[in-house]
Image (cartoon, rainbow, N blue to C red):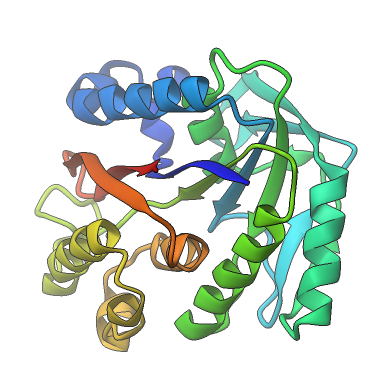
Length: 263
């Protein structure tokens, strides 16, 4: 069963060894991640199902990583010392694989011990006090929003049938063109995307999310839309209370943190 859910950003600057002095400008997000970490600790999930937009993906299929053990690191940012170790929940991964196959949702399995920073940064913040947890790392695809929403709906059906206490986490940065501080430059689509996603994340408006303008999604330079759509599908019909814990973009990338309290 689902016992916790959240949207969290994954900017490498949120890692102490990478962000260093820049983390002072991310104080709101660091605090928000601390609130999600506390909520997870109280919910005591056995398993974290996390969706990263930066995991190796298949254009026409969703995927799960089934390595025996995971090492989430930050080598690509010059940090060879930071590692979050995690064990896989093979049983849930197998159930997801079988269920998706039986319900016509394209899903495949990969196997890699190395996890990308889309997993590493959230796990660094969210698992500080958790004990005996396992991980189910999932990847998006290049399919459309409707396919991602359906994947989320079917993912919920799998998890509801499990005895495990499961937390669903969407690892998602918003636009990389959110304001004039962006190294890639400000774009009106970036501002529009962040406003749109903040509204839809709080309303969990599935049809609204799927109505997103394709031009806006492309030009916003974002990595958060698909993971958030999956999460929205997963929470469809559930009694949840969304709370935006933080939004800021001091370096031009929209960082949103939302916690979903389950009744």
